[in-house]
Image (cartoon, rainbow, N blue to C red; front, side, top):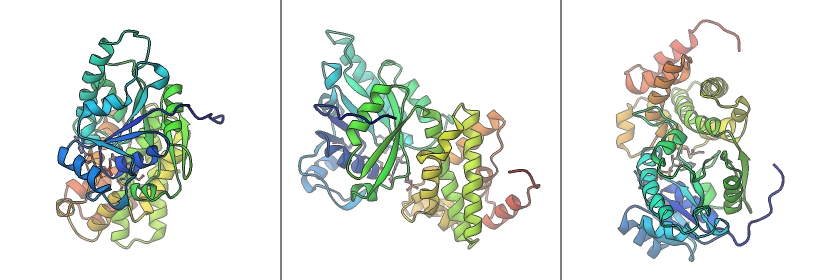
Length: 359
Ligand SMILES: NC(=O)c1ccc[n+]([C@@H]2O[C@H](COP(=O)([O-])OP(=O)(O)OC[C@H]3O[C@@H](n4cnc5c(N)ncnc54)[C@H](O)[C@@H]3O)[C@@H](O)[C@H]2O)c1
Ligand SMILES: O=P(O)(O)OC[C@H](O)CO
């Protein structure tokens, strides 16, 4: 990718979803352009504006004095929508996968009204919509891009993309180095996302393989649970290396069957995010696996408030893989442990006793 010249003036950014990741991304974007963070809860948005700290999801991180907050989606859209393509701002969605469909539907409806009222229909009102959630929809097994295509059908010409990569929100909010990937079929949206976030301690690479990037983000969470279980059982670092490597093979196989490019899986959003999440202590998915490996059930772990998108995603992945005729032994083992009462050690024994095969 050739070097990018910064865009002038910088496009405004609205980040929708004030959890850990939305807040960290808003801090990063705010270094380049006026940024507004939307929280669906009014009292929470007011608290963020007053305290300049996200005490619920990112305690201890001071939020910039000039960052804007709102609980009104209309206000967030007014912040980014413009009458000219050059000034159109960027929408970054920080909500989890479970909230993507509803949020996109609401955005689609509101943006289609704005487009209908437009005087010169060739101008873009937003540079695009970029989601950051990782997973497959529990009920349908669909990828975020498939969900967004359905939910944004009222505004099919608005460019869309996915931002992913190895990134713990807390480290990003602390300004520690991080490298992400924006994947989109739309070159202008890739440029706008890079302009909005790239710089200082954050590098943003561009890619066109939306499916590959999404599959990497979804399956690394499942593999992180598997690695956590292995660690909880005390299986050692050889086992962890084997799970990461065979997990990558599983991720690539599933992605290829969905039309992804295999090279994407050796990049930031595949191997990069897999290594981070399977080994990093800040990973919630790995933490859930650890607790299960130590003897807790999924319900007991979830009752402690730990969020693990990989758990619900594992079932959706397995269902879709079955439809595609793709074999995913690690994902299958994770599902057996999480949902079918198979003891973690028994699942490992079954994995190890599979017939020998080529790598
Ligand atoms: N936390 C990280 O380090 C990190 C890093 C990269 C990507 N991600 C991804 O970003 C997404 C969000 O993760 P997070 O860690 O910020 O989660 P989180 O649990 O910290 O926060 C989620 C936020 O979304 C809001 N939300 C939940 N459901 C919603 C809905 N239906 N509509 C609107 N808002 C809703 C919540 O109120 C909360 O503000 C996940 O898909 C995650 O995989 C997280
Ligand atoms: O804490 P986790 O396991 O949801 O992982 C967070 C990010 O996805 C890491 O890139």
